[in-house]
Image 1 (tube, rainbow, N blue to C red):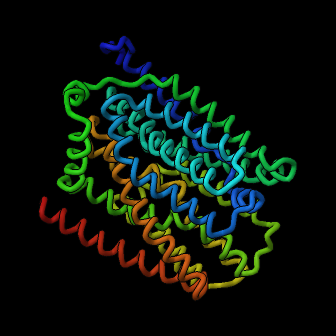
Image 2: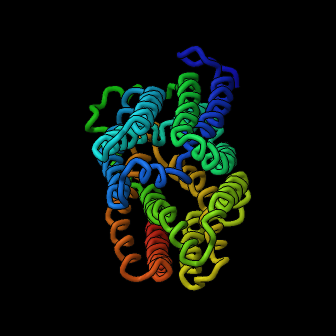
Length: 404
């Protein structure tokens, strides 16, 4: 349809414009080629492992503190502005990382990075979904998200190989390259055209604190939204922690460190390939798509713990499938069931709950690895996930029976 809205944009041109910008933004917005070298960088800067893990805890803490308030800012004022603020904070943070010489300065940099993350979180998806909603094209949402996710993961795969090479030349180069990618994403974010839906006319009169209260009530009172939040939270917590297990598991099972970069490259390729098959996956697993995504992670942990052999790292590829599929699957179902005026805030609540779980469980699992072994902890996590997912599925079925 080619009707005009009050902001002067044609519906179809607005949607198509934001689709293209979303895919480009998806590729560059999180393309930080720091994962393979960050721990080495911290050690080169004189930090010990206690300080390194403390920085990770600070990240989760400040995400928890700011996730919902910044989501409400995006809903109350502007999703586009929220993304721009987040990108600027990331650029500032990485420059501080480059020039930091002590632990306290790194903490300051991580706090800025974490708050910037919360400003960026979910805002671009809210813009995309509402753009599609204007044309009754919501059914295309998961396909577009999956496409953007796959391109990002392919780019990350190349970045994993590049990071080690450029780090060996200059330890600051991965940070400078990452800053360049964030700057590109900032330019793309500026080019987004924010859709104006009728819900925002009502929403603009609601107080900021009321946005947060209404969003929390929506999660608790809308059974479909609550179901998505429960499934996605369990999956998010254990996927977020999974990265910390990769290197300890591979070292303990005898994989030579020199192959880590190549293995991480393969991880990203599999995740990217999976993301592009989102429509096929949902078609084959519906109505158990969310359970299936979480189940892949649970089975992976269980197999990693049960088979502590050299090639057992191959079970991690199951988690990479979830890396590709998880975001599009959960985003599809949560966006489908929430009104536009609370979209970014509800997504932020979802992220907040998951990060609280990470803050609580990650130090505990780290302690258990030190006391026992990475294999035993992985097996325990697999069992715990299966129990949690089973209980959630029972809860969902009972909700469906009540509605029926």
